[in-house]
Length: 423
Ligand SMILES: *[C@@H]1O[C@H](CO)[C@@H](O)[C@H](O)[C@H]1NC(C)=O
Ligand SMILES: *[C@@H]1O[C@H](CO)[C@@H](O)[C@H](O)[C@H]1NC(C)=O
Ligand SMILES: *[C@@H]1O[C@H](CO)[C@@H](O)[C@H](O)[C@H]1NC(C)=O
Ligand SMILES: *[C@@H]1O[C@H](CO)[C@@H](O)[C@H](O)[C@H]1NC(C)=O
Ligand SMILES: *[C@@H]1O[C@H](CO)[C@@H](O)[C@H](O)[C@H]1NC(C)=O
Image (cartoon, rainbow, N blue to C red; front, top):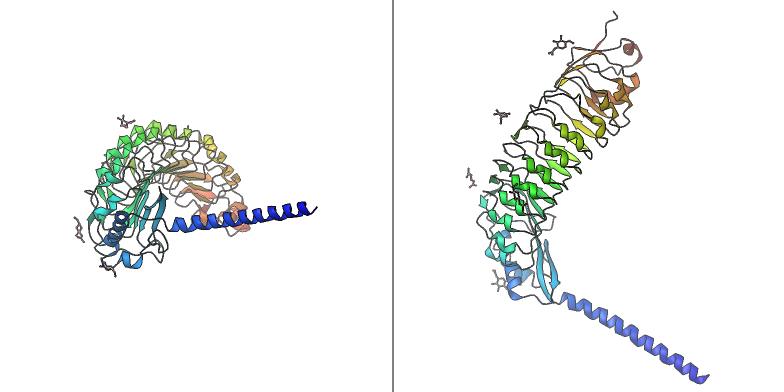
């Protein structure tokens, strides 16, 4: 009995020891991770790189003696690799309130290209007034590690996209949004086969969309809107088999949409507004069945809506075909787009009657039919006009009218239309 008791005591003691040991080890692991050493070259590269951007008065070694440990620098991320700290992300610019801003004459020091494990590099509102070109820098040196490269809102970032960007083969995200960049999009961007996001919107790019971009089969988002791009949409666009969003709006693109656009089976957004596309509505668009938003307005496309299988596009939420030179009538099948919220057909040359079936679309909240040559009597209920108010536009259709009975039963008559004469 006594013996058993002492056994119990002993096992208790052993458990106690084990608990101590575990506590101690986890404690050690913690201090070890914060105290992991950093190579002098890596640390100095960090200080010098940062100083180049935020200015010479910024003294890194003074302010941040342990930049990956207990004195972190806002915007800098590190990782322990083989027992040493390395910089893995640099986010420069006032992304959050407490982030250091760039100095007026911020510069790229060569140290930037010495980081061995840099995965993310981003600049926000850093190059503002001075003309800063990045085309002669040694981007290829970051090729082995860099996965995300972003320049956002840097109006002072000018010159061309460096050829070297095409060598950063692990790149998954290249965002050059709202800078002062110009020149053509280099065709070797098509070599970046891991790219999932390519955004070059809001610059001054000219020239054509390189056919090689069709090699980017992993690409989910391509946005080159708000530039000065010309030429046609290349047939290779059909190679972007994972694409979800395609925004080419506000350029000078022309010609017919290639039938290969029908290969984009996962595309949910197609925005081609404000270009110079012609040649009618591409029949192949009816194969892009995932489409939720189709915006083609302000293009001299021409063509008509009949003979297009609208009923295929059951996911469509927004259809903007204003100012595209459409002729002919509006097919009943538009009334089968059950998820439609926005329908813009204004400022075309459409004719014929307007089907009252439109009113049955449960989510419909805006309809623009104004500026056409529709005719006859509108057959919507007074409840429809009450629901839509000003979001129903049918004015500037001289031959279109609403039933005179409506006048006495509601104040919500369609704006800008006359009641039909009683003859
Ligand atoms: C930063 O501060 C340290 C110590 O105060 C000083 O020795 C060093 O010269 C300074 N470096 C720069 C670049 O100002
Ligand atoms: C930047 O370059 C453009 C064109 O080369 C020039 O018009 C502009 O004045 C320059 N701006 C500055 C601040 O140097
Ligand atoms: C990339 O695209 C270009 C032009 O479309 C083509 O000539 C080339 O063979 C493609 N490269 C690869 C690796 O598919
Ligand atoms: C628009 O495209 C047509 C050819 O379809 C061309 O003749 C015209 O110059 C283009 N306009 C602009 C502004 O690019
Ligand atoms: C509008 O349609 C009417 C017939 O409904 C036709 O007489 C008229 O010429 C058309 N106007 C235009 C501008 O197409």
